[in-house]
Length: 395
Image (cartoon, rainbow, N blue to C red; front, side, top):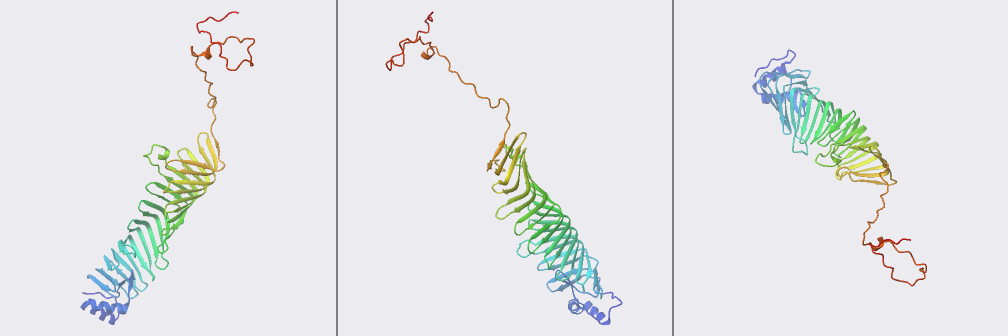
């Protein structure tokens, strides 16, 4: 293997490079001990030479392969062609690389692909980007340009990703999208701690799933605990079930100042501050709402006002409502107003019995005898009624 030498290289280094040409494996060990290492996720690169032929360095647990590398005594190096690396925990590749081994600063450029096995998971993490820089110890990683991180059912997309190995704090910026199963959250910036699971979204965010969407001014939560809080001008839409014949096929919309979401042990929502719910033409307003996504029961407390146009309203201390069956219950000091329309509640006419010709009570009774009175013996047989064909008596 031939090597072109920088003019500043000493005679001892020339001898080292000559030994590298004679025995690359033995010379690699000497290079490591004399001129130092550059670390790339535990990966080490040797310095101080230019190799136009394929170089395959085995250092520690890593194997690094490149066609040509240019290394300088001040620590700068450039690998102008394709570079790949492998270890028991993963692998990477890129179109080229550069950096400074003395500062432990390495940048991979062009079609960067990295696989890394993650503790506690059977599936490795996959990262793709246009550029990936690793510097410092503990290392800080900065990926830029169409960044994507995929592991099992989770995906992260952004234009910029930074992760600090010391603090475990990650920052994603620029068209950020985080997806888990069918749930997607989007924002321009998301902060995430890989150790604690804490999540913070300092700016406006929105998201959607198969049956809902939402927006808010900001948010925070913890992925490991299964909690998340939306803050400021919160709007949530729950899509209707269009297989139903009743009004439940209409979507439900909720507005509030703050919405707390808990997914363990079951998904619940707690909305506070100017809470308003609308489904179809019906609305409910109140200070506090709790919704159980398993039982579909919404409980609104603290003084509830309901409206159904054009002219039906009610007020109650508490309302319990099922978003699927639309069963509704108002409790505590209920006051309701309903429309009154003239004639709607008019009394029914008094029924009159039909007159039957053979009914004795329908026949005229003869005039009472002057001697007849209450003193008459009880139970006398009444005088027979005149025949219906008899002519009325004349006076």
